[in-house]
Length: 452
Image 1 (cartoon, one colour):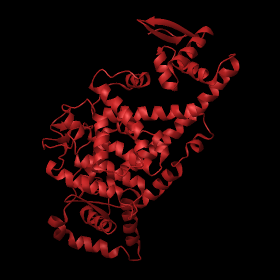
Image 2 (cartoon, rainbow, N blue to C red; image 1 turned 45 degrees about the vertical axis):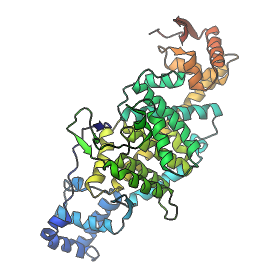
Image 3 (cartoon, rainbow, N blue to C red; image 1 turned 135 degrees about the vertical axis):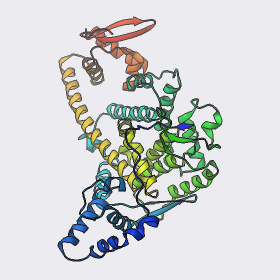
Image 4 (spheres, rainbow, N blue to C red; image 1 turned 90 degrees about the vertical axis):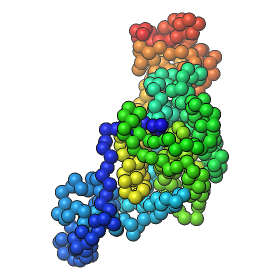
């Protein structure tokens, strides 16, 4: 069974040269470079500069290093930088497998910026204190984006506009794709409630069950770890492209036990964002379920980040970026697997994605502030218009041909159906909207727009 779907636009990275097979052939060249690392001459300075560049500032895989123009033999140089990495590794044991990682210099700045941006700083990022209604709207929009994109990564075919409409109206899903998105949205909304719990087998199963409820062949697939080994991670579009063979199901209980111990361990400090990313990776690697592993992995990332009070991460969607670059997401897993399970590659990719998502949020909030200013101008120009009604009108003006239902407006602005009906009726009475019937439903459209 092919499980998950990633882009297949990138080739599998070439596995690095093995010390066991090639070491003797390159020992002399390796010793030449290694002995000059700490010498005081121009050649040594160049060696140190390249080591820092490819270990600390970029963290390159062999597949990338072999393509670069180097003044040294690339295999010998790989052995040098790989040896230096191994002296800095931290290693965790999951079942009978080892997973090394370390924090290169490039992480320090990125994690510092995430730390500065994150805990309880939505108001500061916004520039002033937004209204509670607007804060809730930003949060709901972000959670919707994550729920939709995370589900699309695993094959949900529902488009983003349709999915948002379903979530805003609270409509019952009609098919598996829609149910995947609705389940994911409800689960992500619950993560903050669950953050004070320690990680446990029961919590992992609960999150997975909520995510997959009513979407898999049997209820046991939704509520238990897999008991079969006919699972591979690859492309549904091309079943011959296999990215990962998960561990045998007999190993899952021990691996999950070790993962839980790692998540709850507090004596040895690992940066919370790094640890959240590692949990994301390990669920994807172990693949403990028949389906829904990716959604569960990403939900646990958010759960752990929120547990450690990175509250601003509620307002970003990492999956929205993944869904636009699925091949790179898959490639990050493959870089790790082809280099001795070195998770630094996957951590590096995800830190970059989080940083990008935070910047997207900052730009989004800049736009929202401009939109709020436009709404305030509408309030000033149109008598007896509340700020929320001005926001609703601004939505219609920005999308003049788009029809809105009462339930959609109620869902988007987090108000009751009677309140949404009153707001829309007022705007109709003021000559700003047109109303028509679609069966029994009242549909509203901007008066200057064209009905679709």
